[in-house]
Image (cartoon, rainbow, N blue to C red; front, side, top):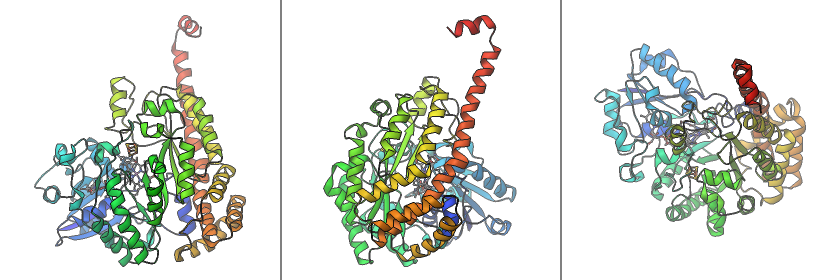
Length: 527
Ligand code: B12
Ligand code: SF4
């Protein structure tokens, strides 16, 4: 059986770092870990090929070669997924779709089989979907909303087929050590997809995955794509020494980064172990400085500590905080924007991913908003359009406030200030001076320092790095200049025009409604 695995194309997004990729000469940031994991669970005798549309186009020859086409992606990739599925069906191929979008929104896909949930331990079901012995797989057994007992045990995980990837096309590789998170943030789809009882791979499995990447010649950053690396504290503590030992045995190994809940800050010993294991950055869902909004969103763990203090502690331990923020939560008012701008002004958080709340399908938030009659449409994952629900805050104030906030946060001056704050407060970043990065430096000087539109930002960052007097700090500064180029340009060229257009659409809609009303009603309404 010949299987073609296709990873759908991403639109331009913050996380895609497209403007940065152009500088470093890579095609994509991260590989399709879901698909190479699926590949590891297919029969060895089958022939497999992988096409990541973010790296290369799908050719007719590749389609003609295949017996079945497996398509994966998230909701933001849905347009590309639909296109690939339609093309494969026109070519007479059997089609199977899976991954996060198919798991949360199966009805939106036209494929021979829609596979919901994870594949580990479900190989028979997976093969039946591919060969045609089964159509849709049993959503109630292992898909979203399944209870803990029915979710795959990650002891059944296999080493992803990294050999199917063109490693040199990516800036970063990925592994996963756990799935699930014990918290219950109302907007979160991760707990619906992967459950609230975190499952962790055995240390030997994680080490085998690190080995596999290393053997294939990968050096450099590896994103540990856990929902919450410390979701199961006991197992995380048991895993960390194995990762640390592996890193030491491999000459420093990889620059690791991951995602974790903010309570990481309240355990200094754990923080130290995470740094010892070679982690250099962590994505933390800070969400908002508004306690009302945190309470309304059920993000109670963030109420238990001072968020600015937590960021300071994590940074001082040696981890760069990448912050996730949300505006438009119930409980947020127009004052939230100033509070968030203040929070970020001198925070050591260069990368602040701020989005307008989206009610993702299958979440407690979407269910509540539907009950309250406030859900407008199913989310397609677009954060820069009008929200897919009736916000509690005036919608125009929300979009306008968001646009102003983003303009400030991703003005070059704002970005440089946050980088400077990091360089002031963090111990020297451990990673950074690795081989591949030297070539980044030459390319960055040419593309950003000589020809770039934000030359001043580039040289300011290089100056800040140089003043710290170490190669690691200088490398950190150059890498952040490259990232900053994307964040600043994407904000100015894509985000702001789209959010302002969304705000204008609200104004136009209100004017049209007001125009429709008979004069007497209009007068009454304005009192
Ligand atoms: C890494 C990651 C990313 C990476 C993407 C890397 C890449 N090349 O794919 C980055 C950082 C770019 C990213 C960005 C975003 N992400 Co993201 N991301 C993740 C994360 C943390 C891990 C994904 C992963 O690699 N998992 C490991 C693999 C092994 O698991 P898996 O993909 O689920 O695969 C399993 C099954 O789903 C299944 N499977 C997967 N594919 C297929 C295909 C077939 C055919 C079959 C049969 C089965 C199958 O088998 C696998 C093994 O069991 C997940 C959360 C999570 N736990 O999955 C969110 C997640 C996928 N992201 C999500 C979102 C919303 C986003 C953003 C839109 C966030 C934002 N607000 O901007 C952006 C948009 C994308 C973009 N480029 O801008 C949502 C998706 C919701 C949805 N229903 O689609 C998730 C679930 C969580 C979340 N809320 O953040 N993301
Ligand atoms: S801490 Fe993060 S992963 Fe866990 S429930 Fe909240 S948003 Fe989801």
